[in-house]
Amino acid sequence: MNPRFPGSKWVTRHTMAKKKSKNVNSAGQVGQNQAERIRLANQPDPEPDSPWSKMVEAHPGHPTLQSDTIYALPTDMIGAIRSWMPGFFSDEELQFELDLALLAGGGFFYKRPFSQYDPIAPANAESDLNSKDQEKRLANVEAKIGKMLTDEFRKDGRDKTEIVGHFDDEQEFNAHFDSRRWGFAGWLATHGPFRAGCQELKSRWSSRVRERGFPRIPLSFFGEKPEPVPRHDQECYSDFLMFFKRWGVETLITWELPLPMSAALATPNMYHLPILDDAGLLVFAPWYLLRDRDVKLKELLWHRQFLHAPMHLSEWFDRDPKKLGHKRFQTMLIVLVTLELVIRQRYKTNINRRIGEFDRVLAAFVCELTGELGVEQMVDTIKKVRQAMDDRLKGA
Image (cartoon, rainbow, N blue to C red; front, side, top):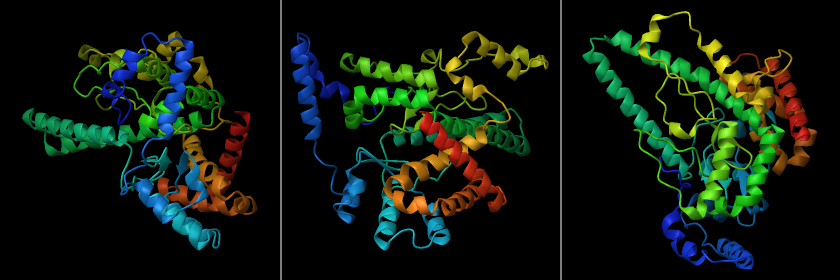
């Protein structure tokens, strides 16, 4: 996987800049930084047929479009608000929210659309960040691997029932791991030290990210080495990589939302392993160990965790029954994106008077997403999760 920022042209774009900067003193560096800011400010607007241009054309002068990061509501939630909270949106506001969801999916980040979180809604944008191409590439690779495995199973004499059972088990394993992954995302996005780290990176590298998007943990689909990062950008890339490994994230979606790394237990690993030394636990088990049924993975992981001692994650590891579990943190992620990052930003006056109604909207939305029954019971859960989120954000 290429470790460069999505959509970057680092080598060609900065060749002359690197040559000129070799003998620059501190005053010259200040001038270069000022020139960089001016250049970024004068970048051409997106293409006329881009999602951003279509949004600006449909809603000229809308104050929300002045923000660097604009989050969208899932279309299903917009429908739930119309059903459960009639009159909350004006006709113009309703059209804005629908257009935003359809054109951007999850929203716009520096005028580029990004996908909605998987546990909130499937992507429905006309376009997407270039990083989405990686996800499509990964999906294609996984599909090819699945086909190759099926062919190998058949050659080994496995029947159709066994093959289907294998892939059903894999899907169940992945669902189990994903629920923890998205719960961890909710915990991170409301965790003070992580949020502070994001803001520190933003203060240093916002202009780079504005131009080229976030770097990410490099992938290696077939064992290939990542391309080297140009010297001009190594400090930036190193800062992000250290932060990503410390917190177990693959990249950032926005300055507020992380994308946690995927577990590679039931499926092949797609990350470039040599750089993951302190991002988690890497376990190699030779085939002969399969004879021993007494070795338990959980006990082994906790033994290894003691050696590495990631104390900055101790709150996440705490399994006190009085505290929130991964399912509730996943719910918190939904509440954060929809309530905190959308409704409270654009409709603060309205929501302050109708927060109880919105709890019911969230309850119905979460029940529909998770298949859980009982909207009335979920309303109480949503209220507790919302209050816990507010406390965590205030503490941050």
